[in-house]
Length: 315
Ligand code: CUA
Image (cartoon, rainbow, N blue to C red; front, side):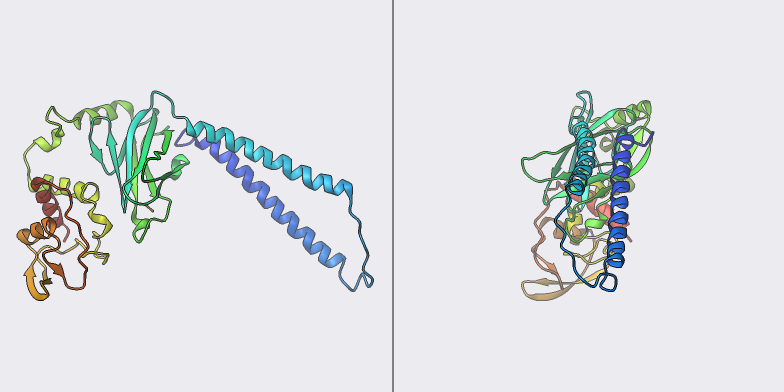
C-alpha cells in the first residue's frame, strides 16, 4: 500500500512503460550495432537489393501495436478513475497564484498548508488567480493543471497514511516558480475533526482564532497568512532578501531607504508609518531602483496592521 489510493495503480503502469522502453532502446541499439558490423563494406563488397519481408512487416507492426494498446488501456482506466471523485469527498478549494497556494474549506477557513482527513476521499477544486500553475503531490501520484478562468479542473485522492507530504507547482509560472511549495498534512479523522471545529468561523464570519486578543505574535501570524495569500505580496516581494520586482521584506523594517517623491530623492526610515503609507498609496513614494508598479492591495486597516506586524518579524 502507498501513501495514497493511486500509488498501487500508477506505479505498475509507470514501471511497465519504463521497462518496455528500456528493452526497446537496448534491442534497437544492439540491432543497429550488429548491422553496422555484419553489413559493412569490408564484408559486402557488392550491394544487394532487398525486396521486403512480409513476416517481418507483420511482426514489427503487431508487437508494438499490442504493447501500446496495453499502455493505453491501463492509462485510460486509471485516468477515468482519477477524473471521477466520489460523491462523498471532503471539498477544498485550492487557488494558485504567483507564487503561493491558498486552500479554502467549506466553513470558509483559509490556510496556506492543506489540511485533510486521512483515509477519506478529498476533492480539490482548482483555480488560478493569474497564470497556469499545476498542483502536484508526488507522494500521492496526482498532478493537475491549475488554470485561470472558467475551466475548473478537479483533482481527488485518498491519503492512506497520516503524515506530511510535499506539494509542488509543476508548471513553469515565472521567476519564483520553484519557490511555489507547500505541504499537505493528512490527519487521523478524529484529530482532523477537532482541528476543523476549532477553526470554524463564528456567526460574524470571523474565525474563532481571530476573535481572541491580538498579541504581536498572533498579529504577525495572521499577517504572514495575508502576505502569502490574500495580499498577493509574494509575487513581487521576497521573504529571503532576494530582489524581485519590489524590495524584499527581509530586514526592511528599521532600514534607511532612498525614495523618490515627485522626482526628488529623499531619505526615509522604514517604520510603521512608512509601511502603512507604502501599502495604502504605493505610488506616492518609490524606492530608488524600483518602478512604480504596485496596485494598492485589497486589505482592511486591521489586515494592514497585521501585515506590518509580520514584516517587523522578518529580521
Ligand atoms: Cu506556479 Cu509554477
